[in-house]
Length: 358
Image (cartoon, rainbow, N blue to C red; front, top):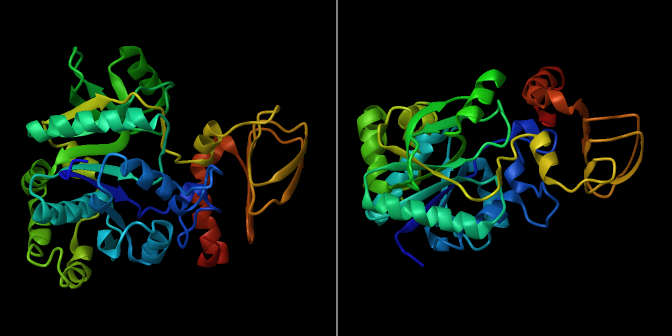
């Protein structure tokens, strides 16, 4: 296995659209959302370890999830955890991890991967990543994996690329979540991909990009260069991390750089961002209901997403295209069409009932 291969496993999100199962104390990446016997972070770690030495997988998460990560990933050691003392989006944590990796191995090529995505055809995934590693080791480029769109989804960002026979395509432009009409036009053009949020680059190239496009943030983290990978690292991070701008890697780097390339992925992918996206990936009964954990008795009920804790019996009559999810003190019965609004519902619950339920 190539010792220059590294991964940054992003595991700090809250997954609020999966409430009430995903909460601040126990986010979705630590749940077995698909009912497979493995949590999402376990599946991702195992997938990455097929191509990347386990000791080279850095796990980025919030301080509060340290024990959860170590419990669920017993093969990882505490030194592989990069603990954020504050939520600052993806750019600062990627910069922090990249600084650490460069100090350990300046020839590293790095995969940045979310911990909560669903990927089938893991051999195809491995082949795609290796193609990207090879391209990034030889050139000063920043890469992303793009997913061929299957319908005009308005919940994903899109990547326009230059047509041509090359396997690796030059990116023309990123477009954040478009309108339905715009997404339809993208599909008609044929040279647009969904942005999967999976990135590949050499550690030299990404740090050069930060130095150019985010000089203030780069200077902030460079101050800790002597402390990285030593006992002084935690003290430096706790003191300085919160001073970093709250900004995504997309806005901070990718949308400003002119050396971005994309590889159209050859594996099936789902970001598992909502109950509806989970529903799409689960087996269904004869009425189109997707069921996790629960025992069900249904009449005139179809196309529902049903999940309970334990083997709770759920009886439903006359319900179509709904999310029915139970967890301890909360029962959510909500139209699947309005799943993007669950974030707003969460805020209303917080205002009316306090933070204990979210």
